[in-house]
Amino acid sequence: PTTGHSAEILTPPLPGQRAELSEHVLGSGASTGGPDDPPMHEPGSRETAVVTAGALVLSCGGAEHALSEGDCITFDADLAHHFNNHGPDEARFVAVVSAGLRRS
Image 1 (cartoon, rainbow, N blue to C red):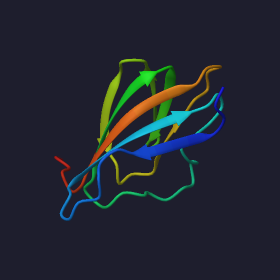
Image 2: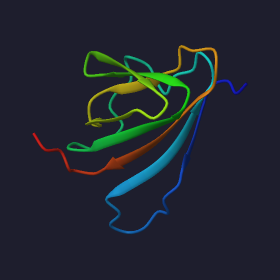
Image 3: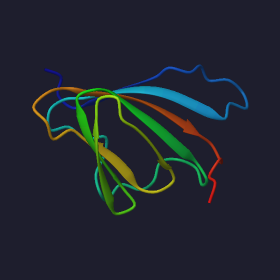
């Protein structure tokens, strides 16, 4: 099985682009980051993630959200957040980050 976290940006870098699509693979025990990592997206950004294989836990804004294959979640991407794979199998998700689209 894959170890660690790998990511591939699927959208081309175009001028004025307002969204980015990426695919992520997390091996068993892997994480996209840590609880003390600073936010990596610009203020007002939103992220929508769809779990395409396995199960993940999203830690965001002090809350944890358990996600299984087929689950979809949208959250404020400018908050510190990371995905964890606590399961024995590889997990995958696709994420869309949209710049400056927060509706609050």
